[in-house]
Amino acid sequence: MNSKTVKPGIGSRIFDAFNIVFMIVFMFLMLYPFVNLLAISLNDGVDAARGGIYFFPRVFSLDSYMFLLKNEKLFSGLWVSVLRVVVGTVTCVFMTGLLAYVVTIRNFSGRKFMRILFLITMYFGGGLIPTYLLMVKLGLTNTFNVYWIPGLLNAYYMLLMASYMQGLPESLFESARIDGASELRIYVNVVIPISMPVFAAIAVFSSVGHWNSWFDVILYNSNGKWDTLQTYLRKLLLEVEALQQIQDAQAAYSKYRNISSNTLRAAVTMVVTLPIACVYPFLQKYFVGGITLGAVKG
Image (cartoon, rainbow, N blue to C red; front, top):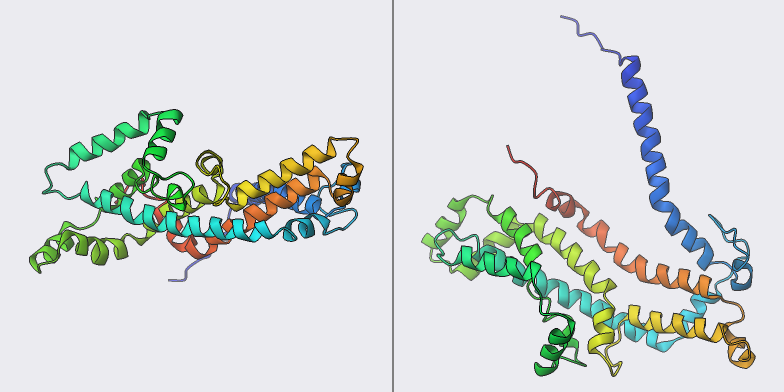
């Protein structure tokens, strides 16, 4: 029998054309804010005050980036931010994954109680002042440990991981226990390798949270020793904006004459956004599988 090629109908062609146009418009809406910020950050500060910059800088200038790179604290803040992301993400994913494994062990009688206990923390909290007093009593203030110890366990991440682990074959765990493996060894050698999609997805969420966090730095790091990149750039931006609002401070303002708060804010946004955006390509293949946790399995 000769197979005949079925030509798409007019309705199918219209639908495909509509999809292509929609995706192009959607992609443009997603990319335009970043392109616009990049153009503003690469523009001269005095000229940028006129507005009208959309896709390309009107008067090209690297003064905003040079101003940021000349500050030595920028690199120390970057080091603290990277260290926080690495330590905070690894510890959070490992410990939260371990908690998720514990609450999915079928022969563990306290798993339901532990799940309910952590669910309560999602709806009720101690508040800002009691939390701050707790950090002071534990001696975590003005230390690097305050960045990762309070975030070791996350109830929401635990639910996502537990949902994924519940779909794993129970025979894998039973065979490992028959061979004499402890629960911790089962978690490290069995659960983590086959649960890499959900671990990668949680790692992305956790790393972005640690990278963008700045309020806890101001709250618990009063001496400024462990200032992160985001906190330092915020202080720098506020300093420039304050000096530009003082009309009588021409001498102090002279070093900022080629930049403005708009161009500096755009440059700060690009400096903060680009490093964490580089994490996604490495975890994309796992992240796609991890975000389908709630999908109906056939």
